[in-house]
Amino acid sequence: MVTFFERKNCWLLGIVLFLPAGVLIAQQKTYKLSELAEMAKHHLPALLQKQALVNSATASLTEAKHSFLPQVRITDQVNVGTDNSLAGSYLPMVPTPSSSAGVRAGNNYRPVTGNIGVLYGEYELLNFGLHKAILKNANAHIDLQQADLESELYSIQENTARAYFNLLRAQYRLGADKQNTDRYDSIFKVIQALAASGIKPGADSSLAMAELSRAKITYNQTLGNYFQLKEQLSYLTGIPAASLQIDSLANDLADKSPFTVFGRDTVDNPLLDYYVKRNNIILTDQAVIRKSYLPKVILAGGSWIRGSGIQYNDDYKSFASGLGYQRFNYMGGLAVTYNLFNGLYKKDRLAVNRFQLQASGYELEQQKLALNLDAAQADNALQTNEANLLELPVQLKAAADTYRQKLAQYKAGIISLIDLTNASFVLYRSQTDFIETKNDWFLAQLDKAAATGNLIKFIQIVK
Image (tube, rainbow, N blue to C red; front, side):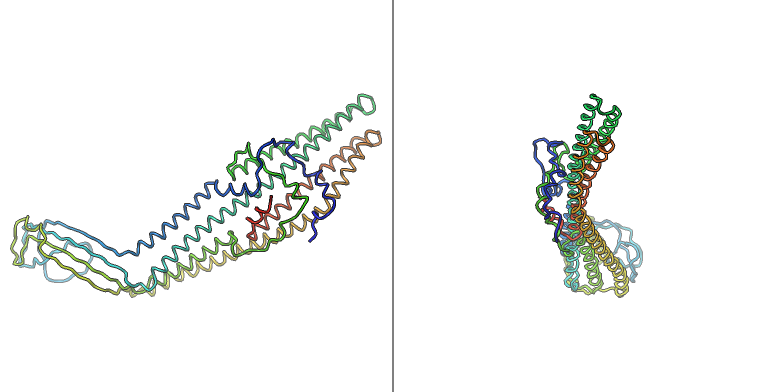
């Protein structure tokens, strides 16, 4: 595709793409877009927040692994109380102190000591893949937080690039405004000389002064906008606004148009990857739900030691006799546990999960549509801007030639000051139109690169 860069009238860029060093920039370091984007990666607290969430998800994975360890509990209990019981069974309702033996004809209110120590442990020997599903789900949460970090970083770098181009536009606009101010100042001085000699009326001098004042006001407004844009870029990069200067792209503009070859990357685009990872979370949740309601095979074992102040023949001893350990037992077992209503519970939770998965899928498709729209709109903007950039140099050259002719004609007394100021305005408008259109071209390239997942490549190319 032939672009305006391949035409032979690129020398006209020297009229428009001014070297801003003469306006604002002293001899100091200037920053490239790639340098600014790199600084933005390490500055804003929002990125540190996202990184902390990644670390939190990683810690949750370790927590999940540790939760699979056997449950081992050790307890020791010393008691003082009575020992009265009755034969018979009951269902558990509230925590009820347990009496061992003590079945007799009446109550015995004499207190007695007892001591028991227990070591008990259990381990899910077989859970049909539940542990694996939980770990996969934990890893999916890490991936989601990492994708969230990458998406935030991607957006910050896009905003940095946008601020860079807007600041560059303001930089060149200052040059155009300075030239405009200088033109009106020259016109004013010419009119003063002609008015002093009686060739031109004094009203021309007043009108020229008004135009010069308006040009200065426009310059001041552009200067204020320039400093505001520097503050915005400083916010994104952490570079103090007072020392923040960006490089000029004038040389590159005259040589090449390297940004129109990007294809669409929907796989690694961080703006899509976040939604893909969130979809994966729901899929891994589904696996955890399915595995959670399967039977579990539990390996359990324990040992305990006891002491009591009551002997086997219901003989009550002293308090001290119940404080020592007198009996030792151990037990091991293999248990299978399953809730008969698990099928219903699983069905309910899977129904919730299914609708969440549908919503997540639609959200992903919506984001794809939005990015495709952004890319298509960027393509349309590029076509429009490149068509205009083919015409603007012609307009600019004609406006410059016209201004020089009108200035000579005014000095010769052929035309009025209004004709001269109109020519000056057309030249100024041609210069600003070129700057605005060129900035729109850059921003359209940026929009396309961001929408197609090529933002980092784009930033590296802009030098």
